[in-house]
Image 1 (tube, rainbow, N blue to C red):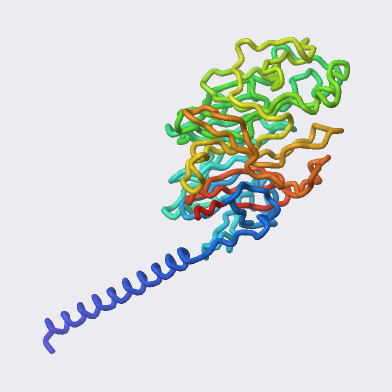
Image 2 (cartoon, one colour):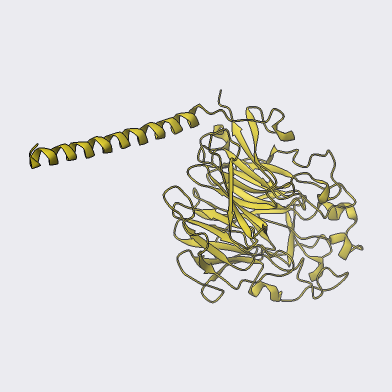
Length: 438
């Protein structure tokens, strides 16, 4: 055989080998895709005890997760969960469903810090501790590239004994909006103390009790590099960017202990039902009025707080913004999600899901919440009354202490197929709500 013929033979052999490799890879890929397509979601026969509308079903994706707070789902259906407290040095958990049945098959963890906030875009995973916000680079499959070396975007935020968690969201222009909760109930000189007057002005508002705005591509920012975007918000755990409005929308935890602190003005029943939990559309410079006022959903009025001379009837806050929706007192809205998927029926499109964590400040009345609610939206504003979408998480007909609840909804995320994920930081579970179009 000539040298030329020998080289041609070797070249053809290499081509043949390469062709075989390509065919084998394609066959494996098609097999995996077909297995996923053919996989059947394992919907719980009793929906895990959770009540959902007709046509919907519930899958328990995973349990024994610790205390998962906010969550995010990548384009492949992998789920990132932020744990309130790390377990074995892992404060972020990544779950993957490898066979397409809806139940997590693998679990990995990283990030040795607790917290609540989490957000995902095409390039980065963002997560918060109680004082900082971090950014992790993603690869093309939505996986964190270097979990041990995140970028620190924001640092040295105030974290008091209460309302310390830092929920946040991003807009489409590269900005981060961070809730810095007030480390106080009503800005009293002595917090949660009978008859203690409110500080005037409230000194807390210089660094907490509002929303701060930071750049999503700048390192080690703090107050001097950021901007106080809105104020007068006691604690906003649920917030989301509404893409139809191109505005920030938030849900606030209202104040506590009206009858405990001012028994001459409020009885226990009134205190259990006031003030409203509130939803606001936020524009830059807005003031929602905390701590000077609260919102009475029965009178549909902003009422002067007793710490500042109110008697339960006097109105105030003429310059404070009004809520766009109100909810029963002390239900603790912990997550807000505007639904943009295609799986659910059309009436859910662009509406708001809210995870209510459940109350503690209604004693001696039974506690309230422990559910996922839905608010229909049209043209960027609520178009009807809020409704219960999923409840039964507590596992009891009546709950008198939050510790009695089996599950407490905390985080919400939309899957790439349009399903709705709900985290639970009491039972340590992750649920997925799906809709059967047939």
